[in-house]
Length: 424
Image (cartoon, rainbow, N blue to C red; front, top):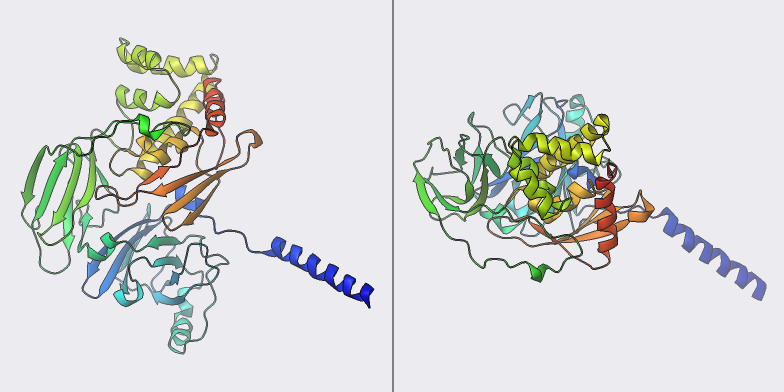
């Protein structure tokens, strides 16, 4: 009998070990940091509903396309608290070569403060819409869009700003802008729900302060406690608006909350001037090297020579380094711009030097970036949410001394003319 008990115990222990191997992997959100896969979103409070405006990459949606909306207890939850399908109707989606624009209204009763929701297009063809509607009305359990609800899905935390803002920004054609940055002089407008209100703006100076390396002590960087107001203005309802460069607070009407908007010069988020090409080199160069580039008679030629020297005179390698590094600068601007240009932020810092994260794991108020393909530089970096009126989705890196070796190894690889290949 003792032998049988021992055998059964061994079997149970073995099954327990195997269950760990069979456990579903953590939900990975790295896709959202791939510019070609990113889903853009804005929202507007409309009475007892919250309307989401989304842009999905690709243009393969059709009338009757089924979208799954689901609510989650956490980003790691295995099953949704609820889910239901909704069908796209004419007038609530449009397609262009750059993507598909969709808007969906959610009852406020289903999206309380702090709720995490996902929105995902189904692979079910529009012709099956009648069957889907029948399943929904009969409360029949619906099949998940995919195993972990991340493929092609938007995940969103319902914040106070999303529940109170009753307007969205629009482009010159009146379409949702879906970004919190503009180029100086770019025309935009405001689309409000309910009574149209005048737009009020407050302008503050732009920041050019880059993020500190990941092993630095944040206390070593003096931060101003307040920003000096430069000027303010008001625009009549329906007026096309153009702003000069600066960091702005906007609100439509005196009862709405303020929200941030970044307005940059030239062709932002792209880079055109010599100064814009030199500034991001702060992570790879010394101050003396950058001064030499700024002071050169022809700064753009000096920049080309800088990269050619790193490439050991190999023009093909130099071009690859330039495409990769400045491509990441522009991608970081699109992904992370908030109270300052995206490449200046903590997430932009890692994105430039380390590359896009290979995996991204989220919790409420935190996300982790994982790099693992190169064992010598494998690491996990933690970012914690630090929202503000200017940047409600801003994250700050948790800096640690042990990152020093990893950081300098990555910088040295760039200095040797070797493109860092991670996350793509």
